[in-house]
Length: 62
Image 1 (cartoon, rainbow, N blue to C red):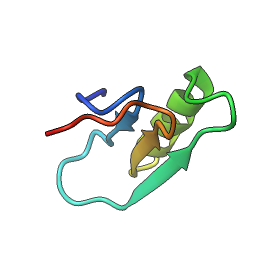
Image 2 (cartoon, helix red, strand yellow):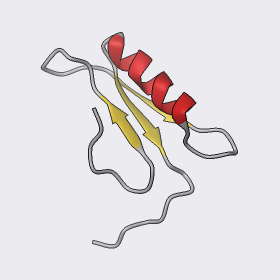
Image 3 (cartoon, helix red, strand yellow):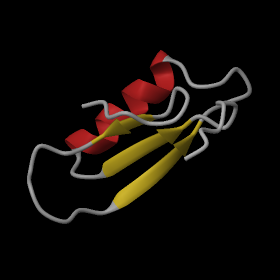
Image 4 (cartoon, helix red, strand yellow):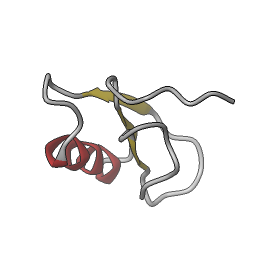
């Protein structure tokens, strides 16, 4: 699942509802890519909320 997040950040959530543990996945030097999104999906499949942050993305003013 992908939500509206800054830059190319990616959020993968488990299918079960309710509270769950979470992890932050940090990309390598090339920035977020399909590998980071796959890692997030694998964490979600194991019951974690996984956020792949985009450390190079543009910040959005409120």
